[in-house]
Amino acid sequence: MVQLRRADSTDVPHIEDFLRDNSLPTVGVKDWYKNFFIALEEKGAWVGVAGYETYGESALLRSVAINEASRNLGHGRSLVETVLADSRKRGIRTVYLLTDTAEAYFTRLGFHAVTRDSIEPEVKTSAEFTECCKTAQVMRRVL
Image 1: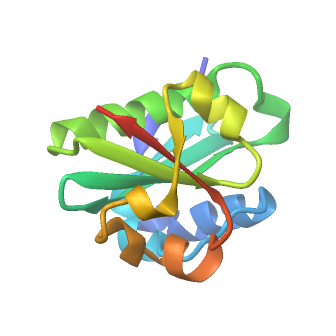
Image 2: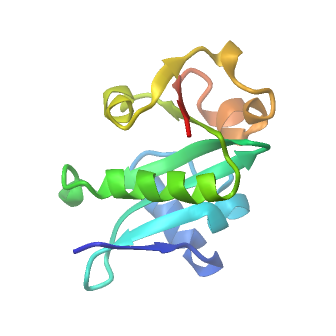
Image 3: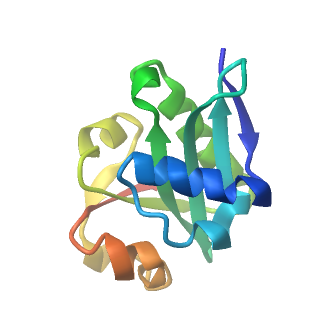
């Protein structure tokens, strides 16, 4: 059984290492760690992480990563659903994400591909858009 918990400041180095191990960018983790969730197995080993950044009534889902041994078991879905529920509680109405490899996966979770021109200007200011994911597919889900 996997347990989910909100990250705290002491988790930042481990989140960054986990993301690097899964070939995902770490830019901005220190700024947004309070919006990250961690999936842990019973003995405390990290299974996955996911987080989001807020921009007005929009959010950027980011850093969804599951360790290789734990993939295809529903942990990613649980993390994404937790992030979406948390963002909805905070007044978020639209969630975006950037992906180079997981468009089919996120489509199954209710996201749809959109053009970069259709994104709210505030979201485009995120480091993920401006620094590291300039060519990634953009997807959106309305909550």
